[in-house]
Length: 145
Image 1 (cartoon, one colour):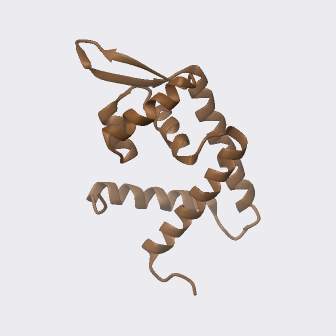
Image 2 (cartoon, rainbow, N blue to C red; image 1 turned 60 degrees about the horizontal axis):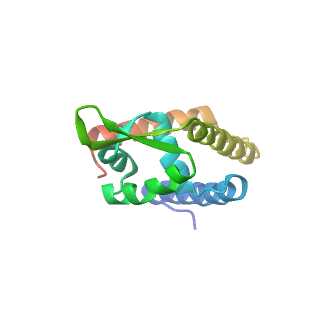
């Protein structure tokens, strides 16, 4: 039975995308979708402190701190102290991290478009525009936490 509630339908689409992305990223890049999101968030915001990165990822500062070692040990991130505030740790991607974020993001986009090209009735430009409008409206009204 097709889902009647748009909120559930959108959630189902996101779950399918995330699940597919996780499998593709594990197979090609040996990273999880969650790790990919960590990288892409830093790619979009080149230098974030732990607090802002946690907020962007919707996780706790403790969760960011625990995960950070994994990225740093693999040469994907680097940390520095904020000028004048030794307690504030700034996180940024290394060149290797930037490359992985870009390559894996391009790969996922290509995979999605390739899969969806088999659905010619869908107008992807219109879909993207509508999803952007929904996202902007929700963010402006703070409907969702």
